[in-house]
Image (cartoon, one colour):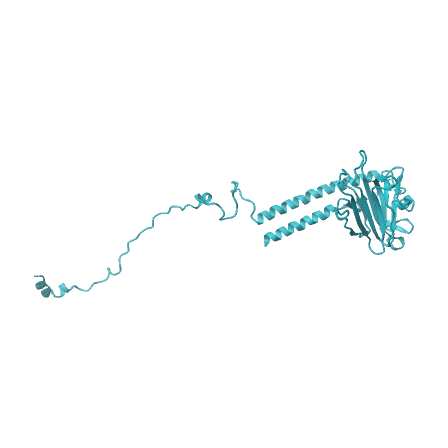
Length: 336
């Protein structure tokens, strides 16, 4: 029973570590990778993720596109949902998706909770470019502002991502980063915690001039009049986050290692004494083979027992006189 409990504890700890791995905190954002099954399921199963505390989300490719050699197309669907009385802004921050003539070979598409669905978006987007240029294409001829960003006042937005299995030409690399930012009406927020970005839309102050565009200039702007070293600060923050993540991973691995040793000790699977020097030795008593435990179980010679002669108590008592002493005359003729 105790061994089963230890196994359950180890499984619980492993699940906690797995949860920390697939959802990572990035400064004031939650970051989800396309490699995770809860974002891009291999069987095209959609998942809904709740956004709390007006915290923005980054969905991007970490290592998925490092070497794009696959046998099947990748089709992803996931939904983000905010709290009540909150809206959601979705903006394609970085992207390089391929075109096949005038059609999208890879694409991103959004669908609001009211049923409205955008076209298929592909092409090249880089909002961190010094010239803030975009070269994007939509299969339905949408404008860049609609392509770059989707406003949803209902606070629920579905995202569909399709990536073709065709190989990427040499010298090119697929890329994708989407920012989901919750917002509130400025008339309902605390001005010390939120900042207006236009159109009666307020987002958290932490997202102003943080090097990440939460909306675009054509509608609203959160990266306007920022210090020139914003990008440098953003890179420094990223380095810090990577360092903290690496240290956290090492600590968690050490905890799991200690837990494994503790479970092995409790179940007596390992030797913990300096007496255990042989390869087939175990610390459990009574488990040694006869040839090993023979010398240890030999009887210790003992001294012989001391024998003491004890006289019978009958010898110490007076016996009755014999017949001859009482009747000497009768006994003598018989002898003659």
